Length: 305
Ligand code: 13P
Ligand code: SF4
Image (cartoon, rainbow, N blue to C red; front, side, top):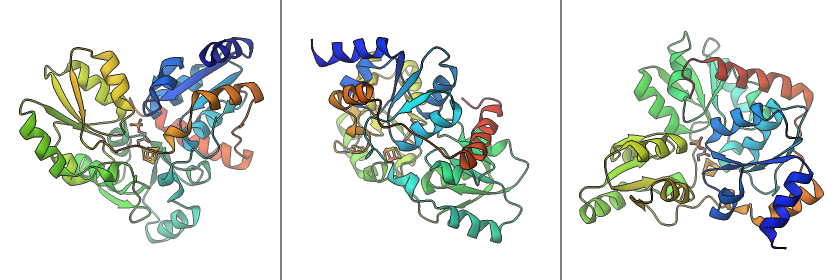
C-alpha cells in the first residue's frame, strides 16, 4: 500500500479531516479534503461536525485558530517546526506598550498572530477581510499588527490611521518580491495581468491589477479574461491556480518565493501525524476564551469573506 492509500485508510479509521492551506506542497493539496485561505480554513474547521480529528496542513497560527474554534476536537499540526515567523514578531508586551499610548484605539490583529496576542485584541482579521473589519469599527485610529504592509494597504483603502504594531512586522517570503522583476516579466508578457498578496510591499502592490488574499486571487484568476497572470505570492498557490484554470498561464513574479515553514508538511509527516495523533495543538483555557472572542467578532462583520 502506498503512502497516500495509507493516509486515506487512517483518515477514515480515525474520522479525520485534512485541511490544507493554499501554500502547501502539491501532493498535500491533492490529498486534502479542503484547500483554502486562512479565513476559509477557519470557517471549515468550525463547520466540521462529524470529524473527530482535524489535521491542519499549514502553520502554527492557523492550527491554533482551528483549536480555538473547535475546543472539542483534536487538532493536529504535522510538523512542530511549521511556525509563521511573522506571527512571532508581535508580543503581548508590545501590544500593552502601544495601548498605553493609544488608550482609545481598538486593536485589530491579523490572524497571523499567536493565540496569546489574539487574547489582547478587540477583533481579528485576515487578508481577505481586513478592510471590512477596520471599516466596521467606530474609530478613526486603529492599532494594527503584525504586518506593516497589510496595515499600509488597509490604511489606503479605509482612509483611517493605522498604527502598526510592531513597527516593522513583515512576511520574509512576500518581501522577496520586487517590482523590477514584474517590469521584466511585463516586457516578456505584455498582455499579462498582475495579482499580488497584500503582504507584498507598497511598490509591489502598485504593479498589480489585483490585490487580495490567496483565495481571492484564485477567484480573480477564474474571472479575469486575461490568459496570462503574473502572481506575487508564495509559489504553492500556483498548483491550485493551474489545476483550476488549465487554459491559462501562471507565472510567479519571483521563482524562489517559498515559505519554508509551509513546506515542512510532507506526506510522510501527515501519515506519522495521523498514526501517532501528534502534534496536538492546545491553547490554555485562560488565553483561549479571550482569543476566541476576537475571532468570533471577526466572523460577525458583514462581508467578512
Ligand atoms: P491568506 O489568508 O491569504 O491565505 O494568507 C495567509 C498567509 O500566511 C499569507 O502569507
Ligand atoms: Fe507566515 Fe509569510 Fe509563511 Fe504566510 S508566507 S505563513 S505570513 S511566513
